[in-house]
Image (cartoon, rainbow, N blue to C red; front, side):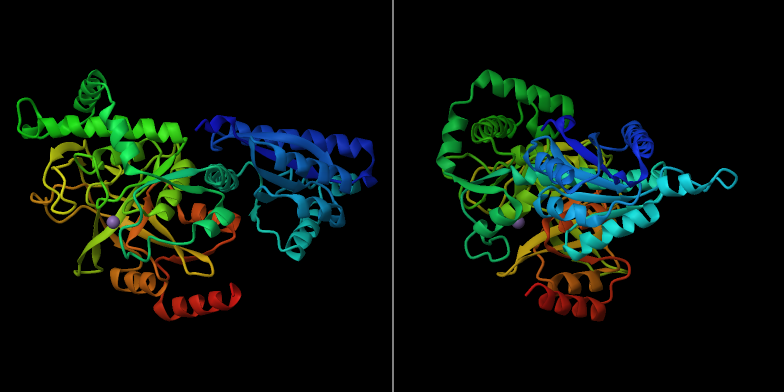
Amino acid sequence: MKKNEYEIWFLTGAQTLYGDEALRQVDAHSQVVVDGFNACGKLPCKVVYLGTVKSTEEIASRFREANASSTCVGVVVWMHTFSPAKMWIRGLQLLQKPILHLHTQFNKEIPWNEIDMDFMNLNQSAHGDREFGHIMTRLNKPRKVVVGHWEDVDVQERVASWARVCSAWNALNNLRIVRFGDQMNNVAVTDGDKVDAETKFGFRVEYCPVGELASAVDKVDSADVDALVKEYETLYEFADDCKTPGKQRDQVFEAARIELGLRRVLEKWDAQAFTTNFDDLYGLNQLPGLASQRLMAEGYGFGAEGDWKTAALLRAMKVAADGLPGGTSFLEDYVYHFKGKGAILQAHMLEVCPSIAGSKPRMEVHPLGIGGKADPARLVFTASECSGVAATIVDLGDRFRMIVNEVDCVAPEADLPKLPVARAFWTPRPDLKTSACAWILAGGTHHTSFSSALTREHLEDFAEIAQIEAVFIDSKTTISDFRRELRWNDAYYR
Ligand code: MN
C-alpha cells in the first residue's frame, strides 16, 4: 500500500456577510493551519486545503469531489467564522467519507489590547462551530470532534490518530480477503455473514481452493527457495537442527517454498489478507505457519481456521499502525495464569507476527500434534513488554460488535523451554477475572487482533466511522456496569 498517496481534505466554513477582506483572512489563516498540520510530522498523510466554502452549492460540490476521489480518505471541517449550518445540509447528506470536526481557533489566546469588533467577527469559531455541531447532531452524522488550538500537540495527535483510521477504513473498503479452505468445522465465533460484512465494511471475502496454492508452491523455483532461506539466516537465529546438515533443514526449505507460492497466489488475487485452516492443507507439506508470520510482518491481514473477520480487522489495524513504534499481531487466548491479577498466555499454533517480538526470533521446526502434516517451521519468540489493545469483531446475527480490551504485556515468569511457539503473556485490564467475564458476556472470540502501536482511540474512531457497536474493557470496567451497557446497546441497535 502506498500510504503517501492518501490525503485528508480540509474545508473551512464561512459566509459572505463579513466582506471580501475577511474572507481573504479566513483563507490565509486556513492555509497556515493546514501547513501547520503538514509540518508537525505526526500525520500519516498529506492534508490538502480545499478552500473556504460559503454556500450550499459550494459545500455540496466539495463533498461530491471528496466522495469521488480515490486519494481522499477523510475530510476535516472548521468554521472560522459563523457559517449558517443549513448551508451544510445538502453536502452532509451526500458525504460518504469519514469526517472530523476540528473545533479550533486561529489565535491561541485573546489579544487583550488589540481585540476589536472586526477581530470578533473574524474569529468566531466558538459559536460558528457550535452551529455546525448542531446540524451534524440533527442529521445524526457519525464524526469525530477534536477541540483545542491547532498547534497543541494533543490536537495534532488526535487528528493524526483519526487520519490513520481513515487510511485503514479506506484500505478495508477496498480489501480482498482470500480464504484457503473454509472455517474450521462447527466453529461458531469465527464464522458470520459475509454479505453483511461486505455491505458494512466493503471488503470482499473470496474462496481460493487450497489446490491452487499447492500448485503454485510446486511451481516455485528452487533457486528462489535457496535465496529466501539465505534471507531467513540473516534475519533470525536458527536452531541447530535447522542448520546444515540438521535433520529439520529440509522443512525450512519446504516452508520457504510455501511462502513463495503463497505470495504468488495473494499477488495474483490482489489480496492483502488471507485465512488458512490447519485441517485443510491438501497437497501442502506443512501448515504455512512461517509464511503467515512473515506476511503479517509485512502488513497482510491474517486469520487462522478460516477466521476472515479477524483477517480483515488485523489488516485494518496494520494499516492504521503503519510506521508507528510497536507491533500488531493475530493472537489467541490459550492458557490462564490465576495468580495475582491473573494473566493469559497468548499464542497460536504458529501464527504470531514477529512485529511484536521482544528479541530476535528463532527458526525452529517441531511436530504440530494436529492436522496430520509434516513438522512445520516457525519463528519462536516472546512478545516485548508493552501496553496495547486486543480487539475482535463478532457477528451477533443482527449486527457486528467490536470488543476491545486494554492489556499489559509482561515477561513470563520463566523461560517456557518446552513450548516452541511464539507467545505473548499479558494481564488484561482491569484484571483477568473482570476482563474474561466481560469478554465472555459480550460474546468475544478466542482470536484477537492485538496491537501495541495502536490505542483505544484508534478503535473508537474505527467503530464510529464503521458505525458498529463497540464495547471497551479497561481499568475502570465493572461487571455490573458492563452488563447494563450491553443491555442498553441491545435496545439501541435493535
Ligand atoms: Mn485458532
